[in-house]
Length: 331
Ligand SMILES: Nc1ncnc2c1ncn2[C@@H]1O[C@H](COP(=O)(O)OP(=O)(O)OP(=O)(O)O)[C@@H](O)[C@H]1O
Ligand SMILES: [Mg+2]
Image 1 (cartoon, rainbow, N blue to C red):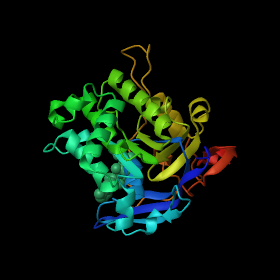
Image 2: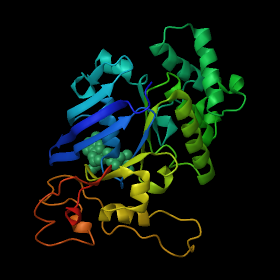
Image 3: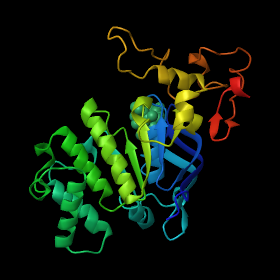
Image 4: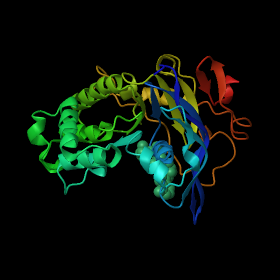
């Protein structure tokens, strides 16, 4: 497979929830591309629309949410499917979900059932999408558990999720997500609940498996610090919109949007004095319901300019190759 071939192309994605209180614009005109074997980091504070973006791609947005826009998925056989046009309960998306595109979560029990052994769950996922017998599926499941670093996989395959430690459960969930060798893995805060050492191991594991399987990853996190190791490009989201987009180096060394600058300042650093408080961003993320005119970040922005930022929504402009920002300070 060509290395820089496109895998997913999202154009003007909008997912709105039609609530009694009004229209909640969780994702509001998001566009990005992911190449094969590359990783995109999707970053932002809680409530910015990261998970709803992921749900939109997999077409699992709960009622009363509706998705519009294009989600062009380039399949291996060169067919391009617009996932946004598929019936969310139809056969086509069910063949893609859990097979060509899979997802892992912060909490493994979101995808693992407490009632079945991890082996049976992984085998079920394999048998759903591959025409092989049970014995072969079991062998594949053991192989997969071995690949994700679960010791003595031929025994642990028959254990229930509660018999595993938090780190091993996370590995079992990754094994389930990867058993069909997906082209795209969406990882939604998969290491947030783990301690720092286990977190680093899981990131390392994902990097290795990405190379081995040649898959692309969308890595969702609120912590920019976590993704430096794993991502190629980063999209910073605020209130349903991408406010900055660039290579990981650009975002880290030349952040432009005041929101990105503040996010970077809130990363815990080794060696920082224990009593020194991390800078947090003033104010909280409001609900994207009946938002006022202007830039969505202006009420919290230290560089707010009256008569400019509160009047219009700034466009996303390319300030240099592969670096875009949505802020009046930059064009
Ligand atoms: N099922 C739903 N019904 C109504 N509103 C929802 C629903 N799911 C999410 N939202 C709203 O959509 C917005 C985006 O939520 P989302 O879960 O995507 O945030 P997030 O960036 O993933 O945050 P976190 O870091 O906390 O996971 C929020 O305002 C949230 O309240
Ligand atoms: Mg989320």
